[in-house]
Length: 169
Image (cartoon, rainbow, N blue to C red):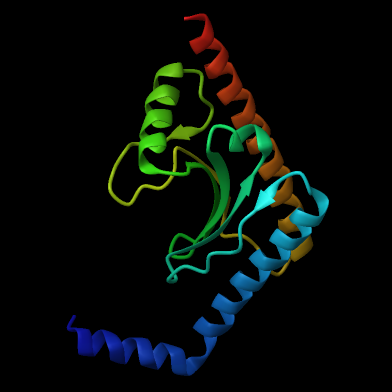
């Protein structure tokens, strides 16, 4: 498809209004969730919602235990896949590579450890909701909160375990 044809398809889709409504709803939902979590968990540091380019939108949550090793958790909405994921992420590519290597070798991982590659921003990924029901906002928020807290705790435990193993090695 030529760029001109793609622009026409894009323009036609925007004229219907559904894309804008859905995109605003996703970002509004994520902003509400972020604000609610920030109020409930003042010990965590929250980034602003990154709106993305209709590929992914996310915000980062940084508990102190992960902050000390320059790691964070991102609650990510993948637009094309229509799903929420939780990612363990690093502050830079070198740390990302280090933790992917360490966690890949540590075994007993209940989550998917990423591979180093172009465009890969995660260390660990966990699919939380596929085709989330945005009409049931309260239930979706509650589920995302519960899964996020569990994922954070699991990542903190795993990172601390790895650090202890390295101290004794």
